[in-house]
Amino acid sequence: MSAQRLFDALKNANIIGASGKTYFELHGLKTVVQDSSIVGNEIQEWLQAFMTQQGIPYRLRPNSQEFPDFLMHPDDDTVDLLEVKCFKKSPNFDVANFMAYCRSLITHAHRLDADYLIFEYVESNTGIVIKNIWLKKVWEICGASERSVLKIQWKQGVAFNIRPATWYSKKTKYPVFASRADFVQAIKKVLDTNANSAGLQKGWFATVSANFSQTTGRTL
Image (cartoon, rainbow, N blue to C red; front, side, top):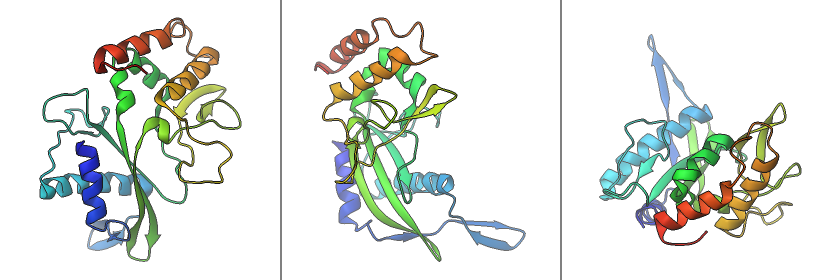
C-alpha cells in the first residue's frame, strides 16, 4: 500500500495547483525548460525527495530504464511496483512497448498489478502547474480504439507501443477495461494478429495466467 500512501501524501500536500520550474543554464544564460520528457524526469526526481521527506520507503532499479520506476516494498520485487507517468493536454505517453510487455508477462505476470502514478500538468509563464494526479492500475488507464481492441501505436502495420485511453473522461467512445483479465484478453487478441509476434502466440494467455497465479496466489 506504499503507492496509496504516497498518493495520499501528495494530495494532503496540495500538490494539485502547485507550480514548478526547471531551468537550464549555459554560458550565463538561463532558460525555463518545458519539454515534456524533461519535465517528466524532473517530477520523478522530485518524487524521490518527497518520499524521503515523508518517510515513505522506496528502492530504485540498478538500471534506471528497467520497469518499474520505483520498488515500494523494502525487499520484495514482485509487489508494490510503481510507474510514474506525466502528460500535458492529453495522455499520449507510452504505457509499455507492446512486444516487450508481452514477453515480460510470461515470467513476470505480477507486473499486471503495478500502480501507475500519473501527473497532468499545464505550462505557465514561469514553468508548469500540476493540474491533476491519479493512481491507477494498468487496465484502468487502457482501452480499445477505432483500430483494435487495445489502443496501440502502430508502425508499418506492426503493434509498437501500448497507449492509454482517456480514462478520466465520461464522454469517451472507448472506456477503459473493467478488469485485469479483460486487459490481458485484449493483449492476446492483438498478439494473435500482430505481424511480428509469431512464436509467442501459442499458449501465451495460459502461460501468463499460470505465472500470475503462481506469483500472487490469485487468478487473473
